[in-house]
Length: 105
Image 1 (tube, rainbow, N blue to C red):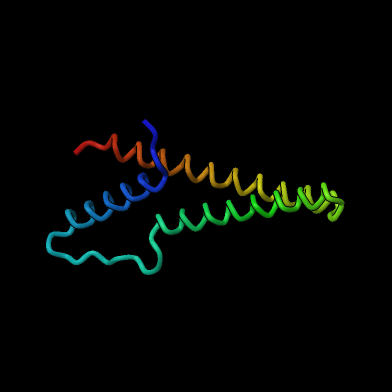
Image 2: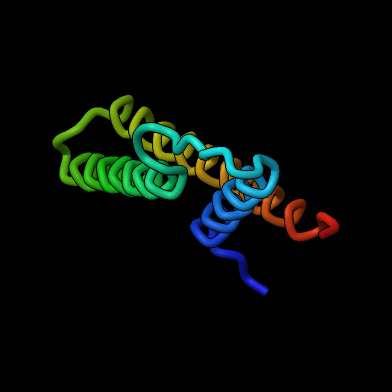
């Protein structure tokens, strides 16, 4: 079973809202200000794609003789670090989703 990171974050948010609404009988639940976690993940993924595109463009420019090797290595390293960050966040979201699914009702 494949777990989409956005599905996991939405499930986590729904569980948190449900738990908050059940714990406070009649109390209003304060919604967090700003973007939700799904929007944050979406923006982070879009940024990671942009960094990857920049590193690819830098590598192509280098092949055409228009860029220094240091610039190419820097761009590729930035793309690698961004990808590792995305993977780490994805793993943590999936782990949180699995922990929520294991909670007794």
